[in-house]
Length: 310
Image (cartoon, rainbow, N blue to C red; front, side):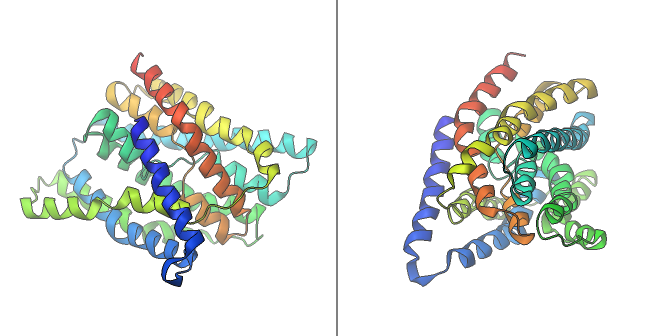
């Protein structure tokens, strides 16, 4: 796991170098938009369909989204209470508060989790990661994220119709449901199609980590202090909440381990898109993403060791 995390930092560093050097005079924001759009609309759906169409669907796997939803709502509540108290004690702007609530609750389940969890638990982990992310985390970030971000940021009221449409128009969601249909109908994919989907899926993780490097900037000193509760919540408290919820729901075995590890992942990259869209402090958002990812070098192996001993 440690080697994989280090390789991710190398990829992010290349994104920073691209941002500084601007090869071919390409704007880093333009490059980031092209990469994110390509992954979400093309590469990622291929992985979703391939993994789910061949998955072993059972009761435990269907409890994953419920576990994720409860965990996220509890972490949002804890973060809101924590930063409401901090807001009264320190100088904390609304735009900073909104970012810190979001970044402490939503994890980088797919783009980081896929690499690390398949390394830990094998290729069987892929379908669990995707179901956890696409049936719970992704819908919630698009449905709840804009509401929180607009309240603390631009003040623009997000339309429920628009957010629902955004979720339903996400290609990975359609690919997920297509995978379920193929799975339940017993459809067997021909070898050439499986290999094609494998090739299409390969660039996902390096491209998204490279994209993080395109957004990083020198942080303000203030960020170090105000982000500590968000970082501790995301990396330490959320996995404990997930563990408790999983036990209450009767989740066990490999899926219990994956549930806790998925909850322990650092901050979700998509929070940065929502922060930018609703005029929150996106530099603070990028800082928390980077900080939680760096600190996860320590916390993820510890979490994996603890849950393995359970």
